[in-house]
Length: 125
Image (cartoon, rainbow, N blue to C red; front, side, top):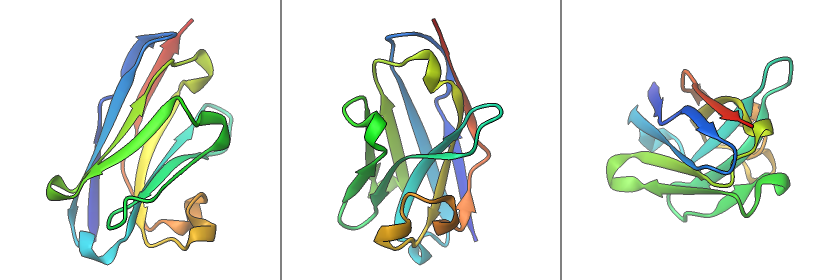
């Protein structure tokens, strides 16, 4: 089992920044990537970004490239999501997830086995 704890969500004005953290514990050696997804009310969960633990290869949703950045600290088993120039449409619950998705599935929720509880990000316009 792997446990994930997200933190860093909150209320921010449009144009502002937030940094989310996701700390992993447990059998993290059984996973090779961490992803961030988000879900707004009434919408499906959507891919935000992902990173491989070992190579630090990253993937981003096309619409978020340039504003969001994912990084990891292997020593702390922690992944970060830096979110800049936030917009009202970024408002959602943000989830981190971990597993061993193939390259083709890194952007799909079904590619991940373990999920955090989610952290709310609200951007006021």
